Length: 385
Image (cartoon, rainbow, N blue to C red; front, top):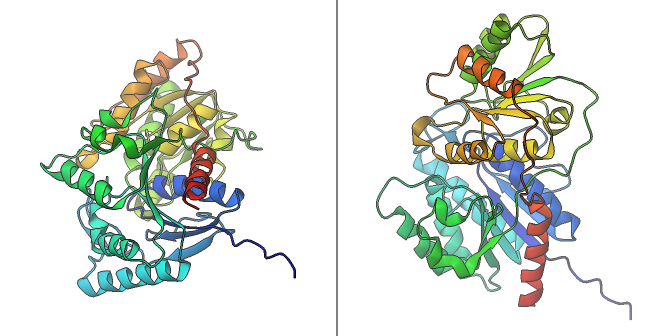
């Protein structure tokens, strides 16, 4: 009798991005790492499609996409900006639950929730109940970045703790505790300390330099709110009369009217593009990066050697990028320019300050978080078997 080939262990990974592309990029890196260790990964996405992510080799379930309908992230709309109704949400919920049943996973990984993504409770709370009552209950893990958005409403953190205690087997914090600990942005972290696992930063593998070479890379993340940053960079380049080669990456979600307006302002010797999937490779050739302070962008910067100006996204009461930028500035890693009142002169001044400094220091932060996450999940599965 021929030996039976053991079935691969299955992971069901839910990720919902609402504005930028950081969540889907980080999740894609983690999913690819899990698959490389022999796990079978189904990644479920519910945001506006992003070219190249999560990757063609993964099982991919696409829910009807929703985006944030306002800067405070409290409402949901379809990709045309029309607020979604109860029928739309009910259909998404059923599609999600059906995908879960079809997958019959050994592990469910939910990105951000319950620490964030409260707007998705309409489908995630039913998913938690389906997991709890499944004939073969999978492990349930929360996947969160190192710095959380700080809650401004009383009772939110307490509710998060209750959900973790009642449903989750672990919380994977994708950061290095020597740089920032969960309790710095989540005051009740000690209550769930026995479930918290630090994985290190989910950064890309050290990339090869791109064939294209630009000295200055300006990037606006997903781009939905990046017009001011790109506009200020165009002004700063002119003020400095900087002879270096500049590449401005607006992000795929920048509204077309903003892109067209910025194209008209961009001089012929400056390159303006919507998206470069090889952004980490471009940084390897650069001497200066100007960007927001999102998780993935900072991870990319840690693999490169260029000087950095960070303009943290802070609209709608967002705190995460400001916390990260201030920590990095304190370590001498970057100059920080506030988003409020951003203009060309402020950016030009930051660039001048960097030009007078020595090379930025290396920060000893574990950056192999995708691989460590995959290893950790494999170990959890093995202990349960």
